[in-house]
Every structure is written in structure tokens, then in C-alpha cells.
Length: 294
Image (cartoon, rainbow, N blue to C red; front, top):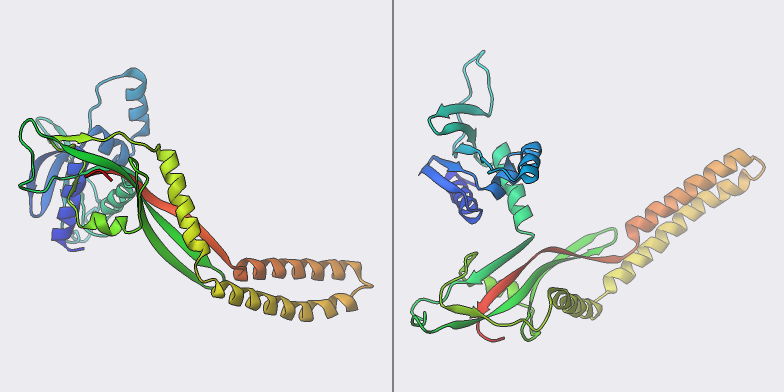
């Protein structure tokens, strides 16, 4: 990521988490964090537990994040990624936020945390906004990104971005691609109304999982048979190696027990490495309110 991309990412994060931008330029931004962003980024669990216990008004931190890496300090000068400045309104922490910095890593982690489950609305197309008394119907969709892993001694992964209408139960297997063509916002647009859901979130996710399971069952599993053949070949080889040694040491109980233990351990390793399996996990999900009655 170059400086412009870093700046765009940081400003987008600050906007989406409700932070107040005090000052910005192409090389820096000064921001007062929102309570949610402060909880995520500042590592102050004792302070926030105090606020939660007492109900006190939280005082969030103010940062100046520099988008370019500072030159190395002079010989003998102390080097620290943090600098503090006192202003009439309080303390400002100055940090570097270039790609690869500790602050950027913490922002990436926060985005992954926030992005596990979200709610977004499609912005109404320009020119199609109704009058003051009009309203556009919006349907809620449950979208989920499934990661499917085909695993043996080799591994292949596939991504399925599916969605289901919570109003009608229609499943869109190209939902992720469909979202890529839309302008989405976390704020509820004006002059729209949300249709009543016919499915609960639990029921909607169950139907998505069942549909994906049917899809996977109909896929080509020749790779699994080949992996099982390789597993049996490997097991046959180690049997040929260990069984004669175990037979020769039958009069030495200690040596025999040692060889049998190694044999079982090696069998378990081969079984774990070669046994074919399919794993499915949900990377993230969200509720997407889109125009129309679907």
C-alpha cells in the first residue's frame, strides 16, 4: 500500500466507526476516537471497565497518525514510535501509520473484528428517489462468505459468497459479485421502508448451509479416492518396515513396546496427512438491505 492508499483506508475506517476528524492533510490526520474505536485500538481494558461499572462519561483518546515513515533518528538519539503533545484541549498521541507499522496492523485487526458481522444499506440510485411522501421498499438479505477446504496431503480452497432473502427465502449464489456492483452505506437512507422478514437469521443461515452442503455433495470427489489410495500405499510401506522388526524383538518386551509405539505414532501421522476431508467455515456475514421485493 502506498501513502494514498493508506490514507484512504484510515479515513474510511474513522468514518465508519464514528470518529471525529479534527485535522487532516495528505500526510497526516488528527482524530478523536469514538468510544467503540477507543475500546478496540487503545488497549485500555481497566479504564473501560471503570466506565462500564460507574457509568462515567468516557474520555476517548486523540491521535495524530502520520502516513509516511519518519527518517531514522541521529546516532545516539532515542527512538520511539510514540510521541505525546500537550494542547489546551488535552494530550495528543502522535504515531506513524504507514503500511507495516504497528498502528496499521492494529487497524487491520480491528477491521477484521468489525467485519465479521455488519449491517449495510444500498444507496438508492440517483434520479430514483421518491418524493417526500414516497418510499422505496427494501428487502433484508443475509449474506455469508463460506470458505471450503478440500484437504489431504494437498489442499485446495474455494470461496462461496451466497445470500438469502429473509423475506422470500430466495438464495442467490452470486450474491458476493452482486454486492460488488452496489454502493453500500452503514446509514439508513431517507425515504425507504424495510419489508418484514419471513425468515429468522438462524433459519436463513440453516438454509444457506443446507444448500451449500447439497452443492458440495454433488461435486467431483475423485481427488478423495486418489488421496485414500496414497494413504493406503503409505500405510502399507510402514507396515513392511515395522512389522518385521516388531516380530524379531518379540522376546524383548521393552524393545517391542518401543517399536509398537513408534509404529502407531507413524500410522496416526500418515492418517492425518493423507485422509481426505472437507472443511467448511464462515469467514464473515452481514445483513444487507437492498431495494425491491425479493
